[in-house]
Length: 386
Ligand SMILES: *Cc1c(COP(=O)(O)O)cnc(C)c1O
View 1 (cartoon, rainbow, N blue to C red):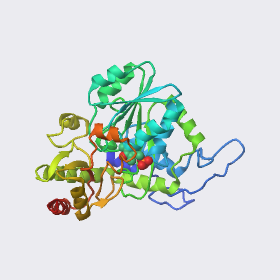
View 2: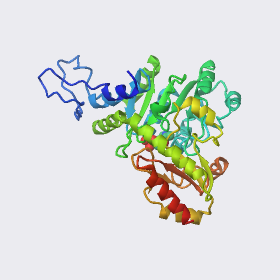
View 3: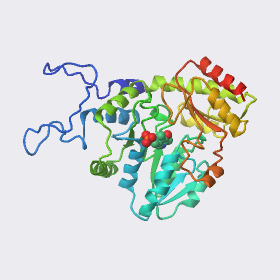
View 4: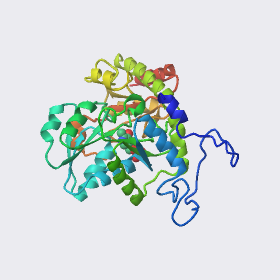
């Protein structure tokens, strides 16, 4: 089956037995616990909803199918998914190598929570392979990647880095939130583990927070399943249903997010109030060639821009921007925008923000599914106010 067929048909089996109704979609199973036929057995493996739940299994089966993976486990948020993978695969005294431009929340989790357990993190510019090679030590346990990154939309060569990790017996983990499996499938490129914030494109409608870990290896899965059951950071049934529903239209939505974003990136690049546009689909992006190879011919729905303006004028732009809602998050039907300096990267230390060039005139646009002409007009009008 191809991508959209899997998204729609996996884990949807109308019940034609006549014992229940024959819904064409999987129902929502709210039960916290399931009746057992006797002391030792369960019906179809369902015993208690912290461990497994039929509705959560639907979204897990669909996501695993879309990532060409054997297993997926879904959690209450992207951060919960990251947390469970770190707890499952690390022990005290291990080291992580991490792309320096990762999501602010991931950086906070690693540097301000896991540091209490004597886990060390080295942040590197992973656009250059040699930086990773020279940072590996015999304590390195995980290489943590994100591509494209948030908010600077830098790419890393997933295949080459995962190859290097494999040679050194290091686990490679890829946060695939921005690309989604429609644009890239890290497990096919050699990664061991994929993590997702499903809150963004997978849900796609800004109405549920969720996360997932996706993988192929049986023994890693056993560890993950054990820690998942033990910690209980599960995705609830109703939210599982919303994410499963989102997955059914992921391909359609990504096509539109990406075509709108490319058009807007081109439009902004030629505008005299813009200092710089960052978008992997523009030839001016330093890794445009890698993006063409690695992202299924598409470039994502996020465009980052440096306005040619002082902070006070950036605020004027923000006040005057129609159709884009000033809000955290991305990947929903509606266009959103934010200032990473204060928002997604608010918790990142000042020196680090300076190093990464996360400044007050940098805005991140999540391009939605509206008509692109309306979005361009809105941006143009707000820029005229600067
Ligand atoms: C939002 C996000 C997360 C965190 O996910 P939540 O669902 O908000 O917990 C992790 N990684 C990336 C790239 C994100 O954009």
